[in-house]
Image 1 (cartoon, rainbow, N blue to C red):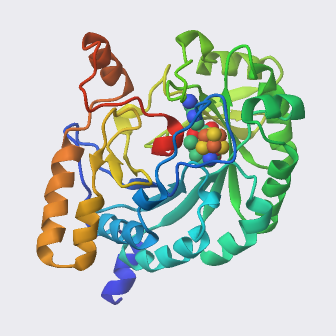
Image 2 (spheres, protein in one colour):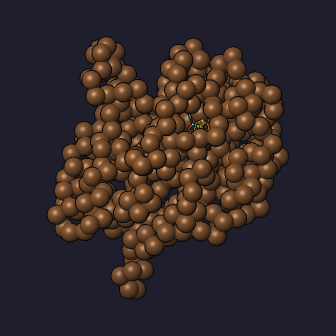
Length: 350
Ligand code: SAM
Ligand code: SF4
């Protein structure tokens, strides 16, 4: 067996690690903060988009991905904003393929699905492995209230992705008093069209900061609703996955219960936003600016490589224990430090 084959089977590079011993194997790359949707749980009413000239180029993004794969990253998820709104993203997926030789095992995308009818086949050809699609309601009127866009193109996008041969997961965020009545219809539908469904607890990452604890539909409430008509069984091993998976009348349904059953204890993710700020946690209030480091990295040289490694090592090491620890800290320092800002999901990339 030659050395390249060995690399393809296993990532031989040691991973970055945080102070709690959690190795980092997954990277989420946001390629834009822009979006054609305005989901109430994500986008502010008046978004201030990042300036186009501040966004990382695909060359910079690729350099970073290459560096990270050579430091233990095995899975890359492309997200946003809406990733399919960034011109060139299909080509970027194709470019990433070369990193499989160094241990990259999976290239995924999270999308609202609106443009999938147009892009699904090209993404498959480019080598994308799987797609997560957001769909929070099957009621066209409610879907419009939630997103300010129409449901039909998303359903067509899901169909196109299936026809292209993708494994699909559907993400549904539930908000109390809004769409929790969709738990059963979405479950029936997922079974009929044969997609894996995951319900997500509403997190305090909405742009206009309307989130309250009372607006969460908890994992237990979701399970109770499912159990009212389905046989709900055994929790499958969660590992480092964010979703706890149940079998519901034989089909797997996941619940991402960041608030009531946080998976932070096994978190193996890192994130880069579209303008090159690096986050060791979804709930960090401050990212680490990396754009200049990436520009140095592209110029090459062992020094830039070592410098970036040092910077990342120390930032990743300092990752907090998790969501609840960060909340407690914020509550005890009512005024966040001057540099920290409220980060919403469309900015960091969910
Ligand atoms: N635009 C794409 C989409 O909607 O799939 C990708 C980006 S979006 C920020 C990524 C994921 O974050 C989506 O599944 C979305 O439902 C989820 N999300 C956004 N805001 C959220 C919130 N406040 N709480 C929980 N999930 C949220
Ligand atoms: Fe756009 Fe996705 Fe946020 Fe909805 S959840 S506003 S589709 S980025």
